[in-house]
Image (cartoon, rainbow, N blue to C red; front, side):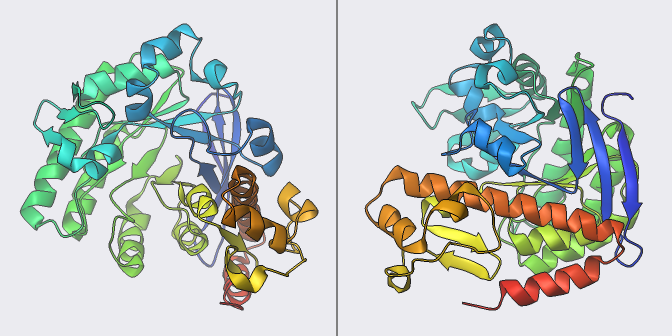
Length: 372
């Protein structure tokens, strides 16, 4: 077995959904996989012990945020991110490209890289492709991402083409800067909502897609159907024997529709973000736990879930915690939502092996949409 080899184990014969295993230095990842986001070296409100019990195989951390605090050099001194945060399974770090996008009022994008002011104290910094690789090598994550420019929904073709060109040029610089063999660098396909740019970006990224490839710049405000159309466009062109990673997507319907289109890896902050706002995924749809309808509901959050939250607490109690701003409420809902998405991915994987992905999806949607 070699690290970063991807074993494609089965393809659902009716949809093209894929099941595989991705080998990394910190363990194997069964795909399709949902990856919880631990932006600042922790998944908000969830113990690493509980993440493992819930089925987390890999988590994400963020290059931009860890560079600013506590600093990648400090993490390196601590023995790398795995030791620093006491997580012995795989870690993926994103490049900071999305933060460039989301904090665009604080940055200026040039050919050499991105000049930005810290959102914390206003201090000035420059992210070059070389700098981003250096930071991620200090962090020691298993999967690292290139610096890219994520263009806004609504960009003109010319603007999107310029961002795509920068992404391609920056990829080549990232490849040249990379020095560690125990890290897998994933190129990122950009191109906004333009079919020709998406295909061009993919074909220019392919020579550098040694261990995996990512699709960025989706789920940024466009209609979901347009995202699915772009995935349909890319699906037959994507390399078959490496993992395909759709960045920043994590609602149950998008996970199903992404997997249907041959995506292997997903990440999103949605599960923990909506939990902190008092919302849970359940087998019968979303439950807004803070609502008054649950005030005297002494049943579990989801009777089909065996997580710690569902086995021990009622909706009435969870509603109380959320409405008095007790942190335990957000912690329990976060754990439940992550467990729910891991179970969804495991069920999808089982359906792929049985060539029954379509039937699985139909049944899931029927149940998930059965209540408001």
